[in-house]
Length: 253
Image (cartoon, rainbow, N blue to C red; front, side):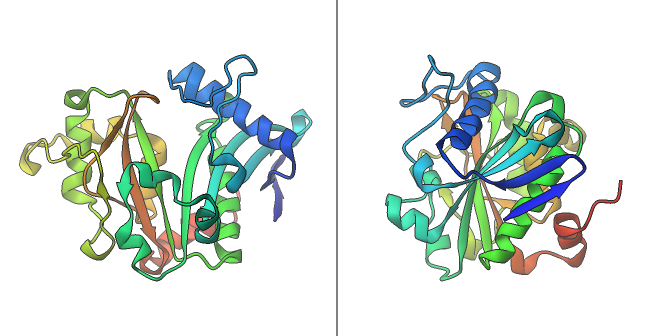
């Protein structure tokens, strides 16, 4: 799959060099910018990688005006690929039995990031367009994956986590649960400052919520990556026509 629009190309990585370009961008964002680390992170070569990378498809956003430099990435793992590696990536953090038992086609999303100069513009939108094409091609029914708040100070995140818990919890049949359980019900619903809570929620999580995404029960504190993770789940069958329009429409501006 390849899509070209507004000076960008979106397609899957085709070789080791393109995978390394994705890992280099991930290093810049997740390690240098956000202070993360991991067992297989290559600090000498500045590559953020792990044992799952060979099994994922890597969706790239490339700036054609700068020779095709990789400025955005998304990591995608279908159920058949997860069987090859032995698990989904987020199964280390969440019990995914409700999703596995649903009998529906699953796609795990992860390691989404965009270079700083491309944030707040059309970059993430183009990645979403490429993701939409991938979902249609593989007839995916449920998308899920962990998304992160920067930092591990739960008190500082209490308002946002509580808002997600009270108003955006996954319906029971698909409700995944954190393994090392961090309660998100920290502030009573009538005491939540919604505006302050929403301002603190990262843009990617807000984008999922606008598309009808919900969060699993409990957060997971990832000390290696210096993040507090939530598991987002999107049931494509429950997306409204308006939400689908956001996801797949042609952008005119």
